[in-house]
Length: 148
Image 1 (cartoon, one colour):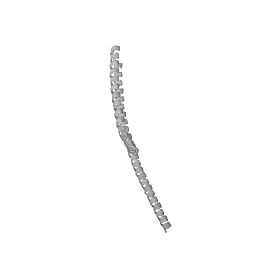
Image 2: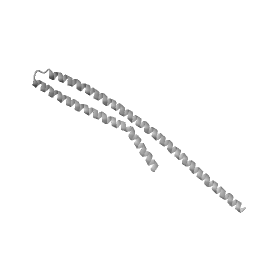
Image 3: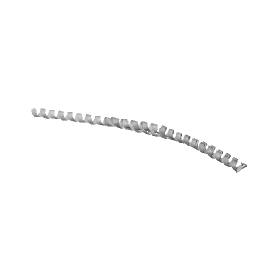
Image 4: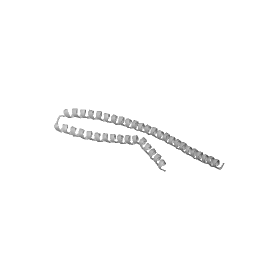
């Protein structure tokens, strides 16, 4: 009888240990599932951020292209007008003055245009990186949570 009670008590203890182990395994799987859901959500948000950044960069490139196209058109027209004026001048002195004036104005226009383009590039770059920086920050926060 004492032997039967010992076997029964041992069986109960083994059953309790197995139940506790099963609960721990179930808990671990649930945590892993939650972690995978969070990871999938993070990846989806990151992909959306990449797409947003690409859209911003594309629009910025279009603005830069439009600005440069307009500059080239204006510059070409200015060159054409200056060339006609220089070729129709009555003296070498007048031709030199026209050439000098055109060169000065063309250089100033070039510098102004490159400043505009530089500002467009800088603004586009900053804007395009904002969504990526936000995802980077979210990643760092996620990693700090895991470490803590």
